[in-house]
Each structure stands twice: as structure tokens, then as C-alpha cells.
Length: 320
Ligand code: UDP
Ligand code: MG
Image 1 (cartoon, rainbow, N blue to C red):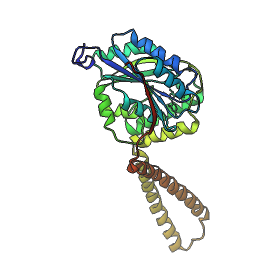
Image 2: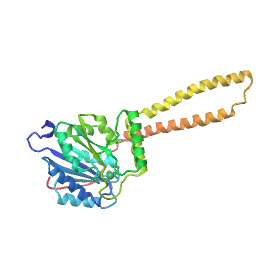
Image 3: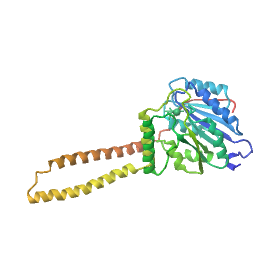
Image 4: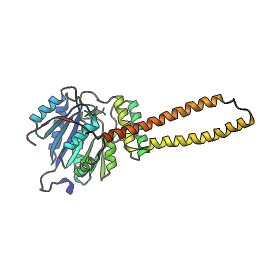
């Protein structure tokens, strides 16, 4: 057994499981119990950190009840919906395990994988990534979008996250390093990849949702994709510069031609060129400003230095 997985006094290591919950009232109690039962079968102690990301249904009431009846539960209610990345962050900050697992609360990340992940950790791996072998019954469109996003991100940032999911186990060392990352624009998968450490993968295929509905809207996903790219790559800004250089070369060539026409007395002609130039340069400038604007807004968000989430209420079980 590696040192990572055994407490100094020889007692069993503590594994925390963080579950972000947005409107999961119908099945969260069952999900939490399934996870707890799976962990009870292996030689570790466990705690569940359940984060209610400002649900509008009964989720918080169910979590409070769960904390009263079941051992090893820590429940947090965020003051509003902060988004999954921030809910994960809250959960990780409140987890005290020697290893922390993050997974979805709808059981799309199969708990049956937990024993395998824990044993990989005990073999000395510091990060155990569960990677998707297939994306479940996602639509063709969202598969294509996911591929496009990951290949863009790989080209721009050098991190290959295709198949990456928010289902992973991280050693305490990794969690401590993660907590040192001060950014407000959270992109959990990217941050975890950036950290490095000794990692291994276990594969899983995405299950059907245990109940309820997916909390992601197209807008939410686009926003996450933009955060993912801007937080891990400055390539878009460099593209703007390249575009500028390209137009400069273009301008030089056209300038020579215009002067030549003027000198040989055949000017006027070339109205189309003017219109096209105005349109192309105008749109390129706007796009450039937009890209820079996105980065400036990110910087603005970071500089404000607001807390990443606000906890409104807590409920912990008495027995741990
Ligand atoms: N989630 C969250 N806040 C959000 C969106 C989702 O805490 O704004 C949680 C949700 O409760 C679930 C996990 O993140 O535990 C994955 O969400 P979902 O199942 O809606 O996403 P999908 O599986 O469709 O990618
Ligand atoms: Mg899901």
C-alpha cells in the first residue's frame, strides 16, 4: 500500500465524494446512498459532500433530511446558482478526505467504478481520471460540438481533454495544489489537467440520468466552452495580431497598385475593391475587439477578487 493511502496512525484513509446538485430532489437521496453503500464495501472511511447549487426544487430539504438520518454527510447550500464548476469548488474546499472524488449527482457517473478508482489511488496514483468511452444517449449535434470544442482546445492550449469528464479522484496533495489556484473563471477539467501529477485513467460509459433533467442550457455550455478556451489559451488574441499582419501585407500591395493607377492616370476604377476592403477590415476589427473584450472581461472578473461562491446554509451529520 502506498503512503498516500494510509493515515499516519494506521487507521483507514478517508475518501470524500463531492456531489454538486442542481434540482436533483427526486433522486439525490437514492444516489447518495448508492455511493455510500459502494464505499462501505471497500476498506476506507467515507464522507459525502453534497452541494446544493441554488436549486429551485426541494433539493435542500432532502439534503437536510439526509444529514439528519445518514452518517458522514456534509451538505452546503449555495446562496444562488453559481454553476457546476463553482459548486464543485465549494465541495472540494469543504472536503477533508485523504482523497476526494468528484462526480455527478445523477449517477451518470457510475458509482460501481469507485472501488477501482480507490484501488488505483492506493497503488500510488495521485489523480484517477474516469474517461468517457461513449457519451451515452447524447444527440449527434452535441457529440459534434463536444469534439469540435476539445479539438480547438487541444490545438490552442496543448491539453487534450477529449473524453475527460468531471468524474475523478484526486489525492490530498492534488487538492491542496488545486486550492492554491486563485482563479475565478473556473474550468475544472482544464485546471486538473494543468496540475499534472501521477495520473491514470479508468474508462466508463455514461449512464442514463437517475431522474430529473439536465441542468445545462446551450447558453451555459457555450459560456463554459469560452471559459475553457480563454482560461487556458491566449491563442485567440494572437490570431487577432496575425490577422492584423495579414491585412498590413494586403494593404501594402494594394497601396502600390493604387499609387500606380493614380500616377498613370487611370484612377476612379476600383469602387468594388473599396467596398470590399471596408467590409473585410471593419469586420476583422470588430472580431478582434470582441476577442480582446472577452479577455478583458475575464481579467476584470479576476481583479474584482470576489469569493468564488457564497454558502448560505450548512447541514452536517452528527456521526462521521
Ligand atoms: N449541476 C450544477 N449546477 C449547474 C448545472 C449542473 O450543480 O448549473 C450539477 C448537476 O446537479 C449534476 C452535474 O452538475 O450533478 C451534472 O449536470 P447535468 O446532469 O445537468 O449535466 P449533463 O450530465 O447533462 O452533462
Ligand atoms: Mg448528468
